[in-house]
Image (cartoon, rainbow, N blue to C red; front, top):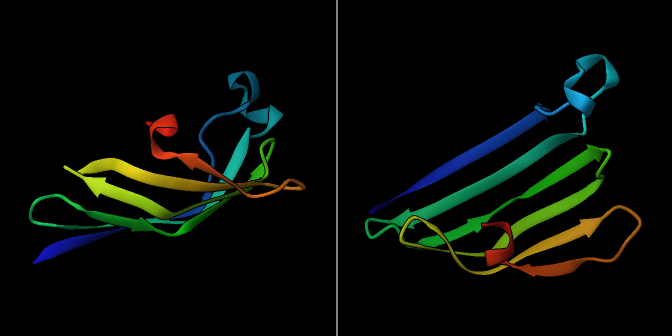
Length: 94
């Protein structure tokens, strides 16, 4: 037995340019980053989040391993708009 946590983002934007909302968001996020884990807090992630605004592109979580309740191996697939897809080691974002 285990758990599956689904995090769905719909037009999520928190940070504004120079902290002034009238200047617009740095980015807007849409998509899902989902975690599945067993009772030992080990498992995997999946899903893709798309960013628009100042940093357009996609991040895929399909290569992330969960160990002890947090990212513990694998890669994020990062694809900037207009650029090529790159695999980034899990430790760079943790």
